[in-house]
Image (tube, rainbow, N blue to C red; front, side):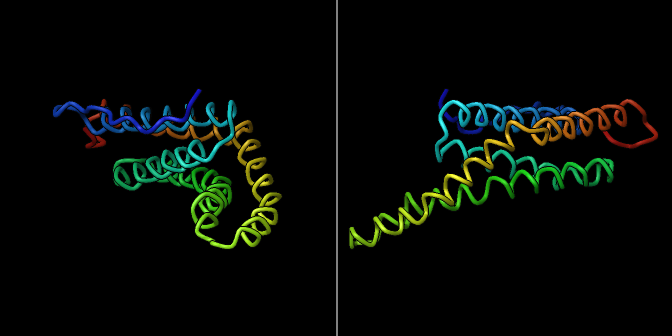
Length: 164
C-alpha cells in the first residue's frame, strides 16, 4: 500500500454544521489511517509527511468548528493530536534533513559522515512512529472525533442548542 494524498470531500451547500464536520473529519481520519497503514507496510518519508498533514487538518477542524464543539471533548481531541504530531515531527524533520538538506552538501565524505550520525536518531524516530500508530493514541483520535461528530449531531437535532 502506497501513501496517499488527502482527498477533498464534497460538501453539499445545504449541509448542516454537524454534517460538514462529520464529512471533513471522516476524510481526514481516513487520510491518517491509510497513511498509517502505508507506513506499517513500508516505512517511508511520504507516509510520515501525509500523516502529519492529516493531523494538521484535524487540528484545523477543531479551530474552524471551535464555537460549535463541546469544549472538554474539543480540548481532549486537541491534546491527542498534539501527542500524535509530537511523535511524527522528529521522523519528518530527519526525513527532510536527510532527503533535502544533506543532498546539498557538496563534499561526499562530509555527507556520508553526517548521514551515518543521523542513522540512529532516524531509526529511533521511525520506531516511535511505529509504536504510536500501533498504540492506543490512533484509536483515541478516532474516538475523539466520533464523539465530537455525535455531539454536533445531537445538538443539531435539539433546537435549544442553536447548531445547524
